[in-house]
Length: 257
Ligand code: MF3
Ligand code: CO
Ligand code: CO
Image (cartoon, rainbow, N blue to C red):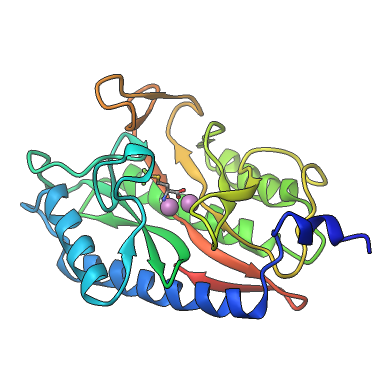
C-alpha cells in the first residue's frame, strides 16, 4: 500500500468529507458573488468585510479568517500593492482604477473552502488590466498542469513560465495548501519552481492553488504595524486568484472559486 502514508496523514479525503467541503465551497462562492454584486468606488474595505461577515452568518457558515491566528476580520482585502492578508479598514476607500483581491474562506459544518478573486473598480490602466488577466491565466494554467500523481512542481512550473513570459514575478514566500478539515493543511502548493519536483498529488486530495503575481519583483515585506499585510517589496501592484480543488482519478473538480 504505497499510498498508505498519505491516508495516515489524512491528506486523502473520504467521500463524506468531500461532500462537506463541496457544501462549504458553494457557500464560499456565493459570498464572493455577493461581494461582486456590491463592490464599487466609494466603498471601504470594512464595507466588504461587513458584506462577507453578514452573508456568511446568514447562510449558516462561519468566516474562517476571523480570529484565525489573531487575524481581526472576516475576510482579507488586498488593495493594489498589497499581495495578500490585507486587513479591512473603514478608512480605506476604494477609488476608480483600484485593483483589489477579496479572499474568503468559509466553514460549514466544520469543513473549510478557500477562494479569492480580483475586482477592478471601474476602469483602470492597461498595466493593471494586464496584471489581473495574467494572474488569472497563471491560476488556470497551473490547474491545467494537475493530473493524478503529478508533482506540485508541475503546477509551479506552469505558473512560473506564464508569469515570466509576461514580464511578471511569482511571489515565493506564500503558497497554496491542503484545505478542508482545517484552514491550512499539508501539502504546501508552491507556485514558483520546476516540473517534477516536490510532493506527488494523489486522487482524493483537496488543496488550493493561489499564485500571487507581482510587478517588478518576487520579493515582499510584511507591514510592521499590523504584522499581517504583505506588500510588494517595490510597492508596485500585485494580483492573486485562488481556487479550492479536488483531485480525482479523472482530473480536477473545482470546489470553490
Ligand atoms: N485565505 C488565505 C489563504 O488563501 C489565508 C488568510 S489567513 C488570515 O490561505 F488569517 F489572514 F485570514
Ligand atoms: Co484564501
Ligand atoms: Co488559501
